[in-house]
Length: 228
Image 1 (cartoon, rainbow, N blue to C red):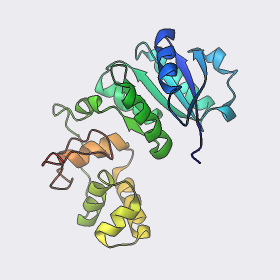
Image 2: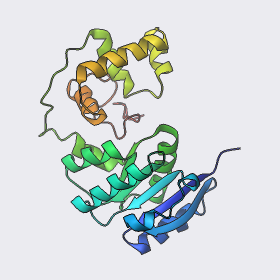
Image 3: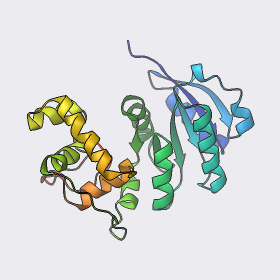
Image 4: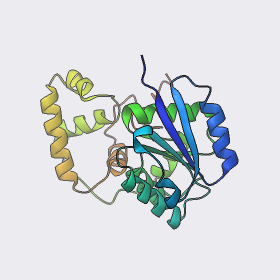
């Protein structure tokens, strides 16, 4: 039996929060436990044992709201977070997805909201495909280079086009332990670069497989050139 996902919706706009609840209440396996206005004082009454995921609806991405999200993450480090708001700059988007598990636009469909919840619970991250062009804006080139071996480049390319280390190991005919060692070396060489920067680096350096367009609609979802 699939474990029920308990969700708490934190909102700026009650109407939108009620819409989310109405949608999710009709989905098997999802339970919205409560709606709470965005306020650090109100959040003190939340029992973390009753929550798997916070959906945080923000009217805009302001400095104050980012500080609020940071505060929430510090208060509930074991709960996953999905932020829903409007479009934003590349710099703000990069920062936000480094502190939350997912980000999507209010203009996304109800199906995308449900997909986001499951992706975050199962894989820890989700990014609305409409935001990918912001991250991969060709006017913003990576200002760094990493001295990777041929094998490390293969590992890095597969990291963003497969679901598990076991798949990488099978494709390259190596052990999962060896895969983990290569990933550790890549992270050591990349220093403090976050996953978004590394993903953009792999795309800009054309490290992805030849049958893939180097603009991923999500880290682990990619388009093939033949459209399939």
